[in-house]
Image (cartoon, rainbow, N blue to C red):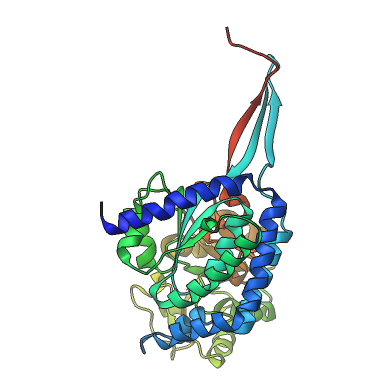
Length: 418
């Protein structure tokens, strides 16, 4: 047994014990832990920001502005983390919900009841606030979690974890409910992925290389998405001012998040008049472009898209543009190039809008709204631990409800099968 496997087994054994206690803790105790952790985040703000500054100072010069933005913590962002914990407190208890119940002719009463998953392995990269969100959702849903932040955010992750540990201690809960990997050693990740029996679910949140490795090597169920290659389709019936406002936000609000629009699809009937305005709006904010031949017929100065541009998650101020002939061609483009994350249509024609909503196979589909609303907080989940694009167990933003499973309770009055 390797050193990494031995170390990881210690973490998973402790998490398994802690999870049993956390699952039995009533909602008030779990909420008290989150309340104390929110307070600790505020108290430790200067410490967290200083740790983050060390991470930022260690970045290589080739890291782009979007990556640095994802990594950066300010006092305002720490406050947002603390408020996020308080929002989770205000959400209904996901545990003990009776999902269904019925009585059989023999008098046996059956109930399907929500219970925790158990132990979650959370692997994330450059966004250190993910550690606080994941810990909060796991505590509230009765799950223990083992956090593994990326090497570039390790100081920030440790400082945030210290605040979560403060909250658990204050509530009298086992600190092993939230643990953090002691290093960014890749061997430890490998051991976590092989920890069948020690971990119930792996959630990776990061770039394609990370997610593909997890999906390839895991011997534990995985909840993930590989890319956020999101599309916004502007139909001929769209209100031009609405289209301008939504697209600018969908692309440029935060270019480095998975819900950012990466491709604009615009209807050929409206493209000659509207596309130049959309491009002008985006270019004024520093956006660059990759365009198909039809778009370049309208704006010849646009750079020509190559064979892979429409399959690229830019995570930067770059937008791919394609002109399409109607909703069916838009849907075909999404099916060919999308990642099943989030798509949006801007349209006043309800029939076309419903055709688009019902015609995509993505986890989230929007009508007249920015794709950047694909976020657990915006869905009312308080926070999210990730976005799921698969079709088993959970899809879209993963919040409290998605971190539970169920068991059956069978209540009798002395029945035997005989």
